[in-house]
Amino acid sequence: MTGKNYIGFQLSAKGETTYRTFNPKTNTENSALFTEANDHEIESAVALAAEAFPVFKNLPGAKRAAFLRAIADEILALDDTLVQTYCNETGLPEGRAKGERGRTVGQLRMFADLIETEDWRQPTIDTAIPDRQPMPKPDLRQFLIPLGPVVVFGASNFPLAYSTAGGDTASALAAGCPVIVKSHPMHAGTGELVASAIAKAAEKTGMPNGVFSNLNSAGIEVGQKLVQHPKVKAVGFTGSIRGGRALFDLAGQREEPIPVFAEMGSINPVVITSNALKNRSAEIASTYASSITLGTGQFCTNPGLILGIESPELSQFVEDLGSKTSEIDAQCMLHPNIHQAYEANGAAVSSQANTEVVAVHDGPVSENYAQSKITTTSGAAFLQNKKLHTEVFGPFSLVVQCKDESELLRVISGLEGQLTGTIIAEPDEYRQLEPVIDTLQDRVGRIIFNGVPTGVEVCDAMTHGGPYPASTDSRFTAVGNHSIKRWARPFSYQDFPEELLPSFLK
Image (cartoon, rainbow, N blue to C red; front, side, top):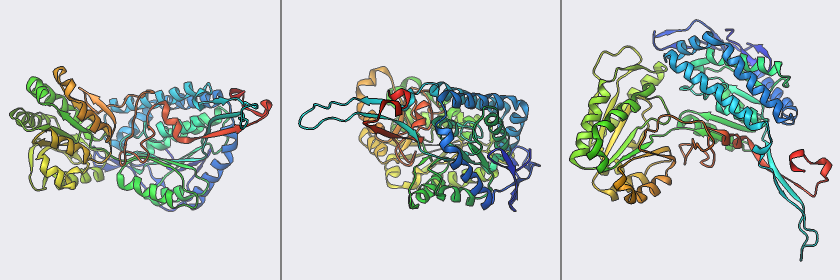
């Protein structure tokens, strides 16, 4: 651990601002000292990326695939050093670290498999019809080409799978875009170790210097300067609505606006039908208590909003959910700042008029450990008070009791865009679900049936995105092979000589 920035293949620490990461479990600072990138280092990283782009984008897919596989191998070679650093910077258990490492390595290898052929570029050939009347048709051949240098912001809650070598970085490199990571300050050590693996893999596989850089930053200035730099062509972000929207606005104000693909927040509504509650209320309550508290509720797909129609069964479910949730041991949150935000936002929601706190975990709670909380309100109150729509990042959920289906549909329609929606129902109700499905479909990127939203499978059919503010562009997913399309644009050749065309367009 050096605490330095990776500017291409070189380590650098020319800045004057330093900081340390924090172990929330022991409530102490970690020992490594990190140096924030200064203006010269920002400029050097972007200049190197711009120089690397013409070379990197034209490498055969098989060579970029070898690079991605080498990154995966180098990450695994970090072994316990990476796992222990991850745990020390997050308070998360070793099993979670190893699971996330597996997902990170799996994503890299998945994209390597994808780009070994050029099918991902969606080659489309429309041959000429020179004798067409009244106008001849030209020969047109379209495919996807990479955008240019990409800035990726590390996520606080996924130090591996959504950060330095996570899905944004892996997909951008796969597309042929050099990447500059703005490392998350809460896990800068984990970020540096992964950056060292990427740099080593790049050198071993003959990638151009500047194909990857990793910049430290305790504040927001480094990220702002990267997004505003004219040689940066796209941005990937996972985090808060406030942070993502600020970057989106900065990118839109540039002389040359660029896309920001930001995943920013979601309360993931869950609709539970009356028959489901009659038949298996206790089971659903137990399942959702586990989902709400999984990972201390620090997932973008945490079920923060549960919807049902007023009935004795719903009242019993609310009571059971509160009881089962409060029985689960308190868990450590990622950082004191995240814990403070959880307490503040949870208190703000639960203190609103016509809102009742059903249950709070009342066992012993150490510093930075979250007390789970279940609250409830009426459909009418939820419709009238936007503060009840606030995302509470942590083990928190609000149950909204609607008076009838009409009010339930109005509640769903009034939601901001969400990553997921869930329906819990019985087979004899399937024919009646169409209005709920149609209404949810307009508000979410994915609907789960008789399950929980926590857990995002990495595969082609996955959509991890949704209407704003779940993401800034609902046409794209941040997970799976299709996420590569964020970093590419369609391009056409017209009437080109055969010998000048790429082989896959001939």
